[in-house]
Length: 488
Image (tube, rainbow, N blue to C red; front, side, top):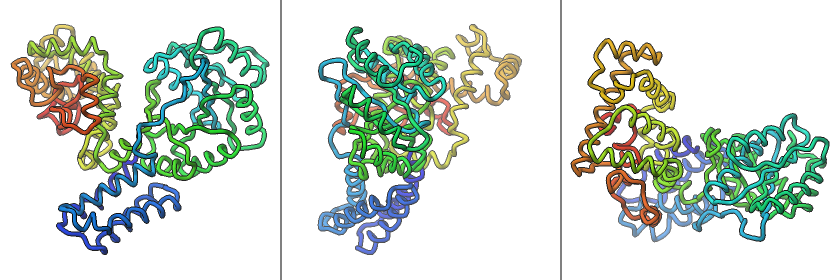
């Protein structure tokens, strides 16, 4: 998300930060480019005007003129303005689910925006991360198989789903869901309402009646970020008829512009509470204005990356890996686990987008080289090896490499590349075993403690984490990244 905007703004700020002093003309020229970049990112025109006016007022003030590094001061002003536009400096607005159970969350939106999938993702997050007992209920009696879809998703993630009773209207299903949630001791009830292809009176009347019956603590509008300003207009019109409390933007991982996210808060006044960033059930991120602003300006999001790793990587498995690495051992089975963990926390492109200062490297490598198919290809190569070959890479002579390549459907050169990568990672494991930690996590690759996360959140530097190559559970950085062989 925001790739195009990040690239454009990066070019603007490179020019500014390279100068010793800035004139008013320099600032105006830079802001013209910022304005164009925001408009190209599909940000609403009134939002762009307000943003540029605010930045200009501060950027030509005394604070910049007297600054030792005026270019960097302007970047900070733009960063602060972005944070304010996206929701402010405070912590992300969480869900209001602390009242007497069941706390009802009503999901609204147009058909095809991703309501049903998001309902399941939210249910998983609440049950897994917040340890709440959740009940999902589908009120979509119009779309074919909508109720069955939610039922299937709920079973796949281990979250309770209200049984389907054929022929019941949405109002009756709502009352039945409330009763079932109370009797079942559920903390949260998520209502997945029906959508339409366009906003009409029937849709709004039905949604309003459900809200009247359920009295939800949260009414979340699910909007497709790929629709840009259409999503903003949809939010405005829903908010006129429903007591919306927040927004969820889906398909954010496929939106290279990000105009909807940048406009939503300013236009509707509603907080963006979550971003849908993939198809997996876990791919739902809390929206944090500071972190998003950092990503847009190429400053990365190390805290978000570490939190993802803590959430996705099995702690017990990581401890076993750390003990093995401490003995200087690292075989292909270990490497396969590392590659799998990298895929879990967002893949190459996702991880690089959260590391500071790598936007230019992403541009140089191109999308083809950052395609996660590479990771799956490398895993396929490892799975084409025998148990003995995985445990003892020295067995891999030319004949065996040719057999492995054929089994994985790749060329021998791909197998050789993987072997080189493994050697580098094994060398690093040996260095770790001897107490040397040029990269990786402090304490021998262990997962970060809550105290460490607090340190990161306060901007303090942690060894390894704030340098390229420091990845939780990943010895030596980013395996599979082209051009990073020396550190992987």
